[in-house]
Image (cartoon, rainbow, N blue to C red; front, side, top):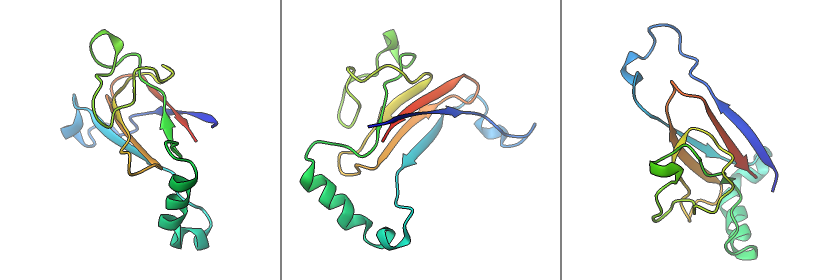
Length: 120
């Protein structure tokens, strides 16, 4: 698939949402249909993808090389394997639920440079 870089920015105005200062933020990306007719049949379309392309995801993400100890994201269920292309910067704990082929999520620190590569 095609990779797209998305730069994550903290665009709060001064004093806005002070409760997230020093905390990580969770972002969730989801690919959906633009065509309204297909929006109504999204579940069937995703099932068709799953049936015709077993093991393939609609949406993927490059592993962060700045996350976790030693620059590796810990292995575990629903985590991207350490063999993913280390293109994303500053993302922590990237996850993909195996039942949601069109969705990925990760944590990031608004105070740090963060860039995620999403593959569609």
